[in-house]
Image (cartoon, rainbow, N blue to C red):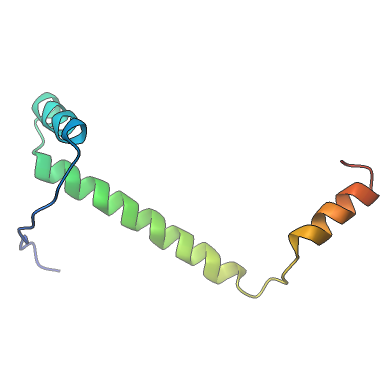
Length: 77
């Protein structure tokens, strides 16, 4: 994969922008690096979720109502 960067314009809430600037100054990372790390983390979490969904795709569907009825019948609720 190329290390080329793509320039984009984003609009942040002022308090987020301030927090990023402060964190950048304290950590010596750029605002851009912090945003890239956050996007990378969010996409990684999405990939983990998609893997979990795929692994569970063949599991039988159990209706919520049935679960509640079973819990009530078994005296759990």
